[in-house]
Image 1 (cartoon, rainbow, N blue to C red):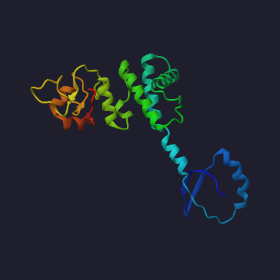
Image 2: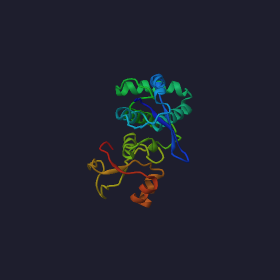
Image 3: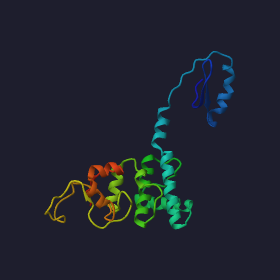
Image 4: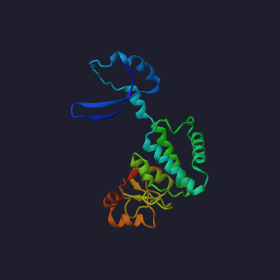
Length: 223
């Protein structure tokens, strides 16, 4: 007898252990129909991972991604008063229009799409001055992607303040050079506000600053 299931609970007993299996509705009837053939019989059980199903689960939006999306939507709701569900639908429609993705559900969309949607929501917050409860850096799996987004939107990667000048160059251009004429496209940069964090990095140094705030300079050709 073979059927798909998941291990629900395991419990260690004085002699051996007890394993409880969870069987979905689709297969429950077949299992019940045949189970009596195995009652009070010595059994040999083997477990096998459903590789295709497991890969599909890994490719789907994670609970953490879903949590981050709703947290950002609540922050936008605090700013607009529109309501989270209404905002969710509006943002999904705009995301689909801009990116040309097909409409999706936050219950089972692809993990890559969920990451793109999170970045889209954070861009909206940067562009509209929406304060975020959680640091936007924590919404990115790759810190370098977050830094590049901040460079693109010209906001401080530490506090979120907009800035109008140049980013901080970790790979320096050098004294006496005209910044407007020097090609800095291959130099590492950090987007920092001029009120607080740009002066701070010059005071404590690049390495100490990056350790303190857990950031990493990146090469960005657009800044």
